[in-house]
Image (cartoon, rainbow, N blue to C red; front, side, top):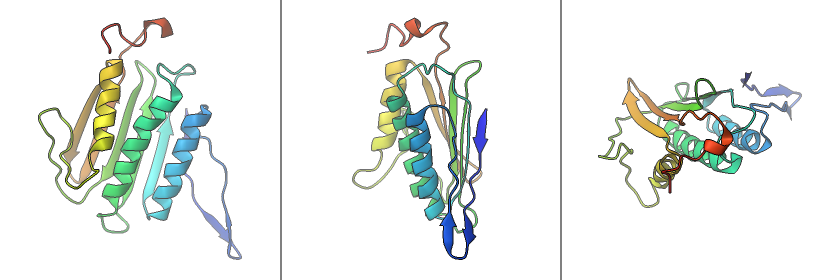
Length: 173
């Protein structure tokens, strides 16, 4: 389990950054580093805890797009939360199957539609959630969006597979 919380240190007005590895996969790690920096710039306390299998059940680029869409939405939502209360938690576990949870503080209730997707307003909003739903459909994963007690949560559970050759499920399109 690689788990990191990054803190910026300042010495004589020189910003020092340490390189952190949230996971062994370079594609996913680069994506986490990018969004960690974006969150930090927005005054958001972000925690990332990952535990990915050595061999991912899906391509790293596709998986990073799922996290990127979710984290982009989380960062956008946190901008409406008062400073000091902006938080994002991003977690993954590999056993008994790959499961991911991205949660963030939010300032208002968010409705979900009949397909379980967040209802969004404004042009260009909602594309990330639809992309996540398409990924889940393609790979037979389950997703759940929930808003409770000032937190917005997305949970994704990939199907349990006995080997890479069993993935994606035969009924996926």
